[in-house]
Image (cartoon, rainbow, N blue to C red; front, side, top):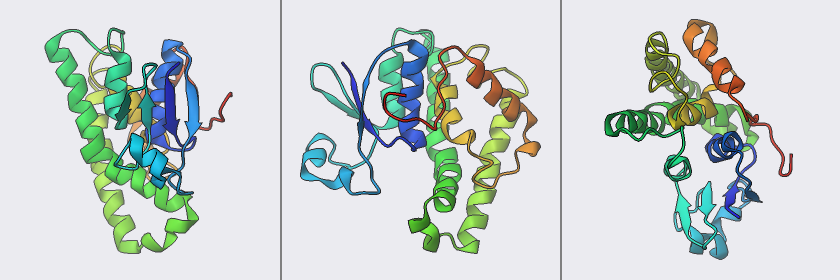
Length: 205
């Protein structure tokens, strides 16, 4: 069985869990938490020298890191990853957008608010900068979702799963979601897709 090493409350770790749920595929969750040092043990670093989660462990013992790379692997041959080269590249475009233009701002602002040990890093200047950059990313999504029901077109793909993970908590991170009605409607469409599971999740739940 596939094993996913990750944190139960991490949006990046939520991405492959959400895809697996939508695909109806079983997997074993291995709680590995960057907050308690689990990702820095010699045993874990032997699996992923970058010391981060999530980490996919295949049935034959191979390891794959980086949440969006894991999504690409798991979605191969499914409706969540188009076979057409251009459509597939469009999905990848949004995966890259998520990692470079969205996650560094929306996810980071969320973590500074949610995790007490990071409070000292939440200076007013940094929080304002993160808010501005995150709003820009949400604005890009709003523009696209005003044209198509999902980010890469007419159907839900891993582009939506990747960006859903932290966008669903953008309000928690302090973003005014009333400014983004198309994004809010899209969040509801992703959640309504069969097999959906919430981020608030416990192993075996």
